Length: 422
Ligand SMILES: *Cc1c(COP(=O)(O)O)cnc(C)c1O
Ligand SMILES: [Zn+2]
Image (tube, rainbow, N blue to C red; front, top):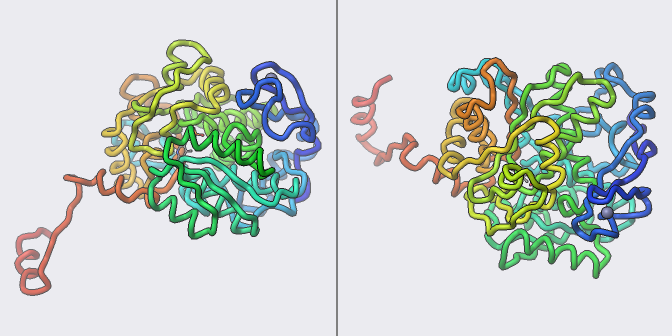
């Protein structure tokens, strides 16, 4: 099964704006009629896929990473899969966290357990294959941090040079990841949105392969594997709701695609409602959703959750469709709620999430409080990145909430133990 892929089951790449259809060899990134706005969706012949693979075949598939789903992925050359084990991250029942809010069927999937510690590895791994299939000499991306770290790590694993555009404000740990993997780092004195445009221009001029979120149609295809895992790890009994943080909208669009694939194949009976969580200071998609339009009003974003700090969400159409077509909702959370969610998630599940990832739990809490989710429902919170990526944010989260004792290394221990209960 390792050599079977969905590449020859691709019917076309279809523009979300005009519906124009292209063969995979015909276009590299976006619909030529619509510039950077012409995001493409990869359309498959599900009957062809279903003829080759089913749930039973997967059940005996020994590969414990995202490549177990190669028969559903648009990969032409499986031999080019990066060697790092991406995906098949733990999905655990969160009993104590659930009890805190009166829910008994609450689950957490920890995608911080990927090789570079975020869900972005799923997309970057696929980008690496595409770049090598095309024989590109260099790969590039713009990122608020995690997509960059993921690309730098995947590039290092196969020895392909990477050039990364990140805002100069990216957390230090993420920049450290880029540098340690040997990527060339362009620190843009501006926003992620500006880095995005610079990267596309550089890629155009130099012929580099560009991984930019949304612009590159295959990133959704990598991220959709998280939905496959949620379904398979839960024995194909999908949650009623999946809650995830949203910046550009590519992850939530990827989840939607993944669940739609499984539904089209007849492997799941229904799609979960998708709940998109945005930071109050970066709530462009929430705003468009509330106004019932696809037109966004760009902003200058402000939130501690750097990974979802996005003023011009690039995957707006896929994100808005994901929520609308699954009868889902968007909710917003404040930075204070995000910091509280970091603590609560860590203390009641043992999962240490970066601010953007913890925003999903903050959003789940908000949805529960607003009566948007029922206490008998099965709810899954997708943790998208690891907390070690942003130590200052974690220290901020525990200000006034940490137990810490300072002791001189002498008789003081006796004294302290005497005052302290067992
Ligand atoms: C990128 C990212 C998100 C948001 O994903 P989008 O595709 O931009 O919506 C959420 N959490 C983390 C940790 C991320 O790195
Ligand atoms: Zn078009």
